[in-house]
Structures are given as structure tokens and as C-alpha cells.
Image (spheres, one colour):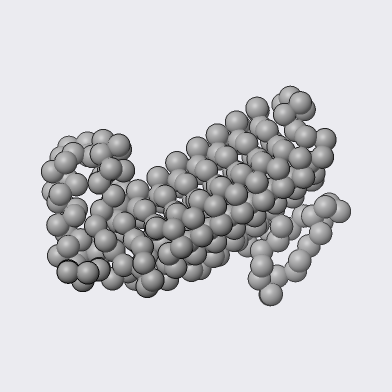
Length: 246
């Protein structure tokens, strides 16, 4: 690990494992336990590894070597921009997936799992225990209620409060948030066939947001694993569909 990539004004505490080619900017603080994988970029002022904001847990002082809680993991090639805040997990590692972007001033609470290739825009707040699948795009200043689930490839509009679960490849925005079609461009970029895009769009339009019956997908469809993951989540509470004509 080349120390030239770590600003002398950054603080990297005990229990922090750094991969190769990790960059850490001035004023950044990383507290253990934490794992920063190869090629991650941590911007100036980023705050990673403070204890969970839970009143029943001890607020340990990791900077004195008092390590506790379940850790943070930043995946390979992830970018954590200026003044982002990521807290320790209480029972599992708070995780930012490989090649994800966490933009300036974003807040990621304890036990959140963020899949690879996801973008969390500036000012977004994600409450504890949330599951964010791969390739999700969350717009500026959106807020995600604790324990919510967002399926793969979904898009959340800027400023949107998400208090229910968002199905895979859905577009959600407004207050209250409503499902407003599917992320067709994202699906096409992921190599999903146009017929399958139309099939999922129709299924959502028909009100089947739980995907209780399997879609008939082509062999090797990249959509299959994402829909399977969604269908196996427990106690889903999907957001409502925007009424026609609005």
C-alpha cells in the first residue's frame, strides 16, 4: 500500500484493513473495525466507522483502540465523496458494494447493505438495516426509511421519501412515493431484452409488485437473478402505483 495515496491529515484507526491502491483524502476519519478493499477512493472529510446510532448500544471510542460493533466494508473501486457518513454495523458489516458511488454528504446508517454499482447521490439519507440491491440509483436528498428494501436497478427520484419497498427496476418518485413505470434505460444497459422490459412493465401495471408468479424469461436472462432475489425477501411492503391519468 503506497502511503502517498493517504493524506497525512487523514486519520486511519486501529482495526482498519486497507487494500492496495486505496486513496484517502485530508480530514477523512476511518475507525475500526473496517475493511477498505482495493482501489477504493475516500474523499476529504468522509467519516467512516463511528458506532451505530442506537441508544441501547455503547458509544465506544474506537480512536483509543476501543473497538466494538460489527464493522464497515467498502468494496473494491467504490468512491466515497466528501463528508459522507457511514456507520458501523450492529450485527453485520455496513457494506458499500464494489464500484458504487456515495456522493457528498450522504448518510448511511448501521447495518445497511448496498449492492455493487449503486449510486447514492448527494444529501441522501439511508436508515438502519436497509437492503439496497445492485445498480440502484438514488437521487439527491432522497430519504430511505429504516428496514426498507430497494430492488436491483431501481431509480428513486430526488427528494423522494421512501417509506415502503421499491421493486426491481421500478421508478419511484413523488411524496408520497409512487411507482411510475420501469427503468427502461437501465434495463437496456444491463442487457435485458426489450420483450422482458415490456413484460415486467405490464406486470407492474397490473399491480403485481410482489411478482407472486414467475415471469417467463429467456434462457440466461440477466433479469432472472434480480427478480428471484426480490421474491425471496420476507414481509415486503411495496409502494403503491401511481393512478392512471395523473
